[in-house]
Image (cartoon, rainbow, N blue to C red; front, side, top):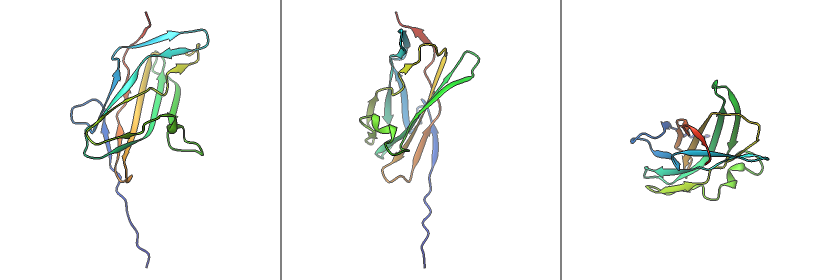
Amino acid sequence: MVAILLIFVALLPFGSRDSDPVRITVRPQQVYIEHGTANQLLNFDFLLENRTENKLRIDSIRMSVFDARNKLMLRQVVDQHGLSPSIYTIPKLELDAKSSLYLFNPFYSFEPDLKFTTLKYEFVFSTEDGQIQYQSNEIDTGNILEAP
């Protein structure tokens, strides 16, 4: 007889509320963009605060870029898919229980002619055994100002 094991995966939304399992904040709070001849560069990163009793792993990060009319202009993802998963460009993927991690923004460079006003990020985390998964609400960077 073959035993069937059902694994329950909980998708719990979170963002920047006090009750969220992982708090994600943009650092510095004010995001600036620098325009060069070859690209546009953003100058912010993320602070991830694991509020759970579990060690978590970053499974994916998705960035969506919108123009002034809220039209999707670009979407990029780093995740665990593919022969050489793009998520491995991030040096530290684990967040210990009740700890914080300063995460370098993997999407910091854009084509010089891409016109956008809004950036939104979504994160997916899972426990070490993969049985519980947390998915963030969209993390909005707010107004993006020209670098002084």
